[in-house]
Image 1 (cartoon, rainbow, N blue to C red):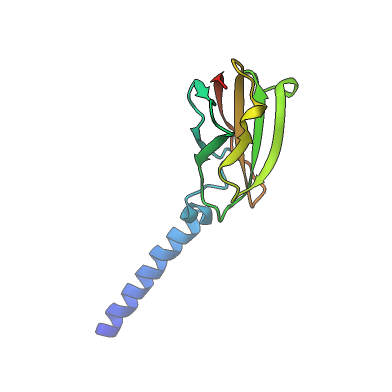
Image 2 (spheres, helix red, strand yellow; image 1 turned 90 degrees about the horizontal axis):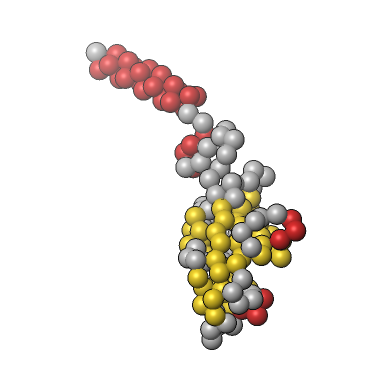
Length: 142
């Protein structure tokens, strides 16, 4: 009798487990969904305020909440002059390895009373890119 119960439990467990495995995308176990058309952009941490003071600083540090480094290949960093993220306003575009954190740019690169917009995109090992995250700031004192 106990063999029969064990066999029934084993069959039920196998059915439930196989149903779960074959109906759930493998990537959902990693906390991502590679079947979605859009991946959220990284959460920007600094600078995200309107005014940035660079008095006495050698560089401006760009920070964001980093995602799982095991699935991220690199980040694309772009810096624009002004609010519009168009090619004519692009000052800098560079790919940084996933472990290059934070990104530091010389304070001398920024002009006083000018607005800048930075954009960050994560590129995953699969080749898929995240949505872009962006924030604008104004250098008020140098």
